[in-house]
Length: 243
Ligand SMILES: C[S@@+](CC[C@H](N)C(=O)[O-])C[C@H]1O[C@@H](n2cnc3c(N)ncnc32)[C@H](O)[C@@H]1O
Image (cartoon, rainbow, N blue to C red; front, side, top):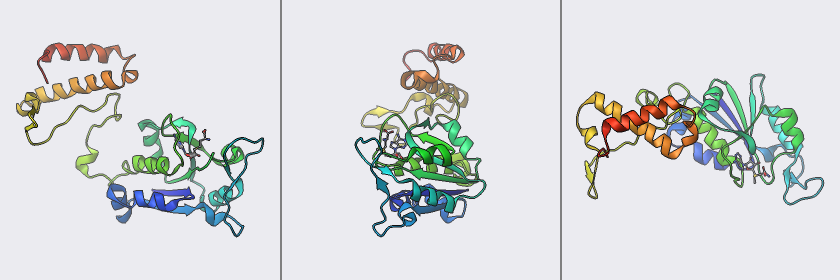
């Protein structure tokens, strides 16, 4: 899969994406990431990428011409062009999975007050937000999208990692996990995990997964009465003493 990242700070993206799992996947040739500097598509000697908004108002906008040239110069027939913006549709695992089927993803990181609306209306396929808050630039959102999509590309995660059931791969959030030592600062690992009873451990993990979802993200489960009933059944099964 090829990612084409358009930004005025490509080095910021490269710093994040050239290490760890995504960096390794690039070195192995499983992913290709092209860093495109928007300033290379300016035509004046100061490499100016921004200008004042018509109608006034605070801040600057990215000028349409360099963005247009950068898109056209790097786009092929199959490229899906994405603009990261707090005005976009929320990024979730379903959208990440859908995007992982693409061959060529172009991601534009905005800056200042963002892009001229004509670019968004005519040259962008999708506007995506990473959450209901505003960052100073689109580099971190673009890196988040590359990381989330890139890890789904076959071979990027080890077999062991990709076989895991994680939060958002289904409706429920992942159950809590513990590692050695068995006792840390006087706090013990739940007995059930040391019992060796595989069936009971699976049941406990399901219970804790339901509990975590109900406590942290009730919106994911509110209309699922079967899951809520299952939670209360498991709670009764394990009793109050379970840690
Ligand atoms: C200061 S923001 C612009 C915010 C814009 N004026 C607004 O109110 O919607 C600058 C850039 O950061 C990026 N950005 C900021 N927050 C984001 C978010 N929650 N999701 C995706 N991109 C974001 C976008 O690329 C945006 O063009």
